[in-house]
Length: 264
Length: 264
DNA sequence: CATTGTCTTCCACTCAGTGGAAACCAGTTA
DNA sequence: TAACTGGTTTCCACTGAGTGGAAGACAATG
Image (cartoon, rainbow over all chains, first blue to last red; front, side, top):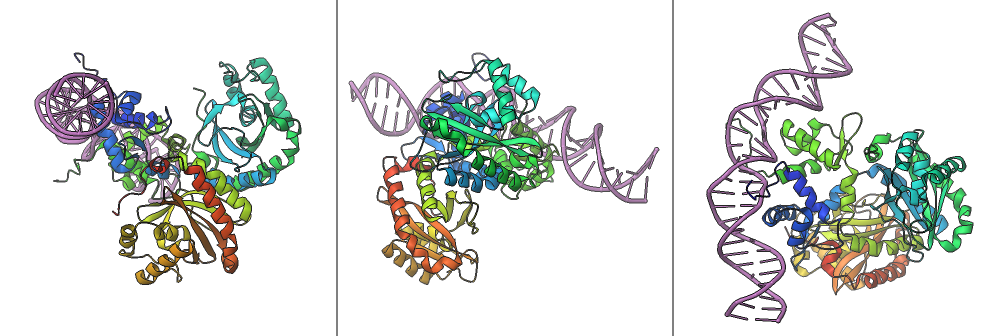
């Protein structure tokens, strides 16, 4: 080894992945050196791999020499979870059309909410989780729904963790949160009020699949509408029912792969 | 070679990619053996790589043992071409809202049209290119637009190739097509009539960026509306202008990476 | 024309990756 | 119950793909 930071046991695959992951750590294009740093790879190694990835189209190189994730990667990934996205998309779309508010489709991924789809127009854009993005479950309406209707052990495991605070309004007391989740379970919907970002609130309902909670749809609105939020409930429930019907024939595991990974 | 199918010179990266690509060749989940076949890898090699990919979440395993592309892959890919997609999405959305018809955003990828985004409701769904999917340029309205406003050498190279026929109405005569493209260039929009699939027609306009053609937006309608298609032109042009404005400040190459690869 | 920060190429070493073969598992049939 | 079948998993000795330090090639910058 002799000063050699050879770090054995590292597979090529892991190196390739760490290169792709480097692009999550910062917005925009990266120089080779950036990639080397963020991925923890020696420059020459990074260079070789990056070149190969570029050949395959997984990365693309800009005229200025910097690298970007390539369109090929995006294409490959479009085959992921198509079932749920394709089946639900038109209904999420309808949800937006009917309410005029930013509409979301989300599932649980481990301890976080993963946004699968989102529909919004050019007018009303309260900041909200972006597609492919993750947010903590306890601060979002979709997250609370996903948690409230999840099996006990999942919910308990979640409450046992440190609950991150986003704004002054985020509910981080495990006891109170547990109580709130119980209530959500009963009333069949969840709301938040400036718990992840000031100025916006949200409301969400569950989407079931074969009896279990499968996904959640929700709306994000400016805080000014918080008091009248519940008027959207009938639409939300109607759309949820339609999505349930549309996905009923698709086996659960086919919908998204087993995104619902263990408790850690 | 002597029976040894060791096939040297094959990099690990290429093997990993060929595994991911295996999922493009067929819908749905694959067994290990399937993957081995489609990727041309020996079973044991496939097994090891697939396992590692699964650990990383790029693949996921269903209870029945079959494999699927994992949600992690999709997440990674969401960072691709975000600029264009995020910037344009609300306007494509508006396009749908204003017309009530299936709306598309597409770019050129080599010799094909690549669909970047698509907005449609649950009612009117004439079959149309899916997001992440590709179609030949000469059979779609967005494709014709992208071709008509592209630089000469790109257009010429395209016309020199064998033009695939999809329906009886597909225009496959290079001469006539060249003429049609000229006309499209003049009038500023393109249409198709059952050229890719019976029962649907389409209309599209260009979206420019720094003077060059960058993308195209279009609508797909049932053939019954073919005669009145052009009434959507004002809206299409208006939306195109808005997208141009919204993306103007973003450097071209940042928009999608250099998806516009060479002529082969 | 030094200086600094990148990117690219080289190359001898070696361990991660390899893949044939054999064991292991259901189901299914005789 | 045993033999068969189609797929999955484990083993392990061999070796060349992958490695990364170092040196060379480029820009920009002062």
